Image (cartoon, rainbow, N blue to C red; front, side):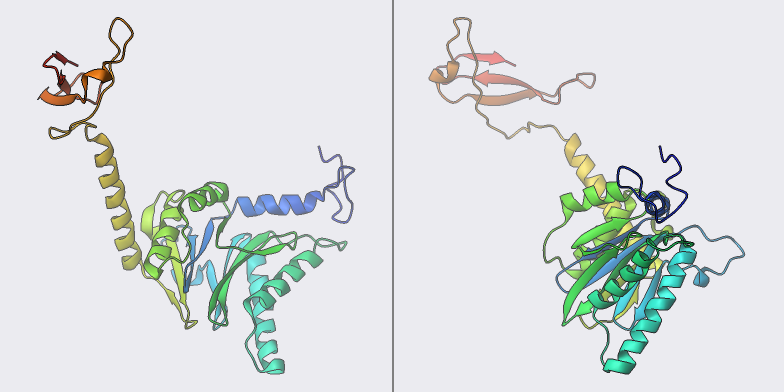
Length: 302
């Protein structure tokens, strides 16, 4: 139990916890999920969008925002907190251009955002930002993907997820991520991972794609729907393959039988399987009924 240690941000509990920071992380877990995947020469951000009300303008509801011409950010958690961080980051990007006469690096702006979040974990009278961010861009032609947390931690990733059901998506990405993926494969993996938790399909998915020329494209619903349809067809084909019988009419396999004396029948040579009929529909076996033909002329049904 917190036992009162969660009332002040600057007070550690006896076991070393800052409960307000942990509560901010819980706020992130309740937000809609966001996914980032890095390919060979592309970075993709995908987010789950909330359903827009009938009289609401959908253009005002965006989970992915541009910080600069070559840097894009998605967030999960409290949207108002994310908006404040976005405004601060945009000002810093333009200030850097004015002073240095060069665009910011992705790691630089990530470190800046993480620094702001960290400041709000050690000052009295404030609360932590209840938001995690995914920041993508290109440095020297190389794709970059970073994540920041309410505690002020930032790290670079090949593929990651934040928000609701992020653990499920991360496990999916760990199984399916491949190094140096093409643009098409990167986009497909991002949408596949979102479909693990988004039940409403393409209409509630937003995708931003940045290529090595630092141009960011927001995919329209039609493009996303086409990819979702392709993914669903692949799943149906895979399910159909699993239902196919393990033995076909043309197969010849080797079987080792143990006779009553305990001696293996392998000594009689390779055994051919001849299909003599399909298994009945109420049979629990996935095999067909077959006849075993021994090399010495013996035969038996299995």
